[in-house]
Image (cartoon, rainbow, N blue to C red; front, side, top):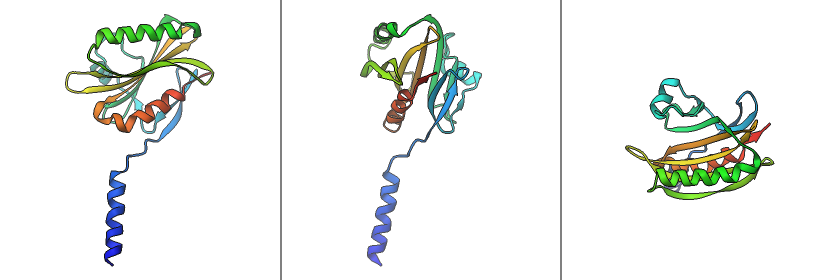
Length: 176
């Protein structure tokens, strides 16, 4: 009996310690021009919340979020001209901009990968906010000859749980 109780206790401890599995599902966005994995249960952020979380006038045009607004996947199909040949240059500009705006940011990586046959540039860093640090995975490519900017972000305390799903989201980007 004691062995059974010990085994049950060990199982409960292991289950409590194991990380939550983030389920992703395919979504078609931007007039069905883009397929991407999105965390299950994420909904489009309300305009009111978007104005609070992204106070500038240049906020993303489409933001998916969890029920508390703590984890976000945002998209901005900008008016800036872009092509596959310009993806690397846009990444360099993004790196320079973020180093100037967030000089104390903790940089994880940056680069250009081919995802589903297209060049996709990315930067990965932790930036400071008013009351916490924010983990960011920002990736970009071209869509219809314009720059498509995509951002995954969450509070740094959730980074360990969300870093792998963030990369799965980026690696699922499929321009139709």
